[in-house]
Image (cartoon, one colour):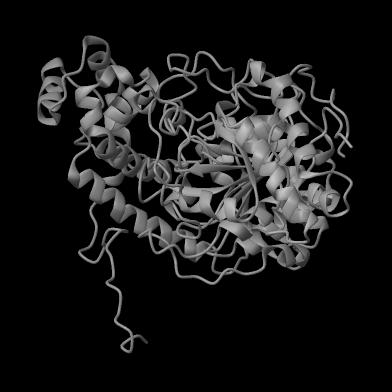
Length: 477
Length: 73
């Protein structure tokens, strides 16, 4: 059996098809590769494709399935990895000339876990250079484009993962998030993306941007798929000094808890006055709140410090840490960086040690403030972004400071935060709804996202990069 | 955003040169110009985190040593 050309099978659907012998692992891989062949020239989601390795792995995994030995619910699922995850023997570039010949000797911990779970990697996915410089046209590889309209930005920095998942080139992928880099492309590409709690998923073997803010997490078509991915990658890693010794619950079972009786808080000033969202985005958000209320949640407002205070704190920490990591290369081979990465990271040279430590002191204050605001609540909900995806070209070096987004506060606090699709702009570009939870309560966040997706029809709409009309594609499998 | 009135949002050429010398960078003219132009953003975010705080306001990344087995609560 082959899958429809334009529909995107979820992990959950593909798993049922595999166990029911409706499709084989090699057929599933070929179905994804057919989409790669059709869309990649437009979407530019990949830096490196590992097609023949994937085909060989698919045969091995099918043999294991035939023998009744599935490794996990992810057995046979085609995935892609943002090109900052170390992969043994496979080029890992961070989308930069600086690392254009870098072949790691070991897999990142998450890559090892996904391999052990039986996933099939189709390759390494485009990213903003070193997860900060993009969208850039002065790098060795082109930037990924938005699958809903290739003239628009897919969001960064996990741009290739967002675009590849939204087009079904892979069924799931891994991104990283230092200041929104999972949730932004998830929102702009119309998929689900989870930034887990800081320390929940190992960062070991992921090229760092800012050690104290970096999070690794899954990006998938649905929240349910994010839960299935998280189940395999979560858990303590003694090789990651920030890894938490926290028990890992059964996320799939937790999805069924829904949101009846859950108490939701909304920091309206973030998106109404601090950095106002577009009218269409606000309307989509209010509609989403209505859905959550209709599912049995209660909604109240909260007031936090201005959004700009959270963004300032995140920015000083992020730029100081990223400059520290790149200082030697920026001094010895600055021309090997693209303009955006070079200018954004180098600005970190101008911050003092006192600035950095003041930002870390502010971080403790802001984290405590958010914890107090959440003390009587289960979830915090707000738009992921102030509007749909902007055009690819013409973006400024410091766009995120000029129009602050609503994602960075939760890198500061380390809270789990999910973005799910909650509608489309009149131009057919997706919006995102951000759902934030208490530390290590990914289960509650995922349950809310799943309940919202089940109650709405957004998952029936699919991107087709060759026909950039929002409703052009076929319905779900 | 709460800002520090002592933090200027613009820099003179000589102030930029001082910052660059201190950093040890040797930017070309294009990067130097970009850094100069970006100072407004750097000044905004740093002034937002420079505030009087009590002695008890510790940085977020102060660490705790692992407690040996048998001595844990």
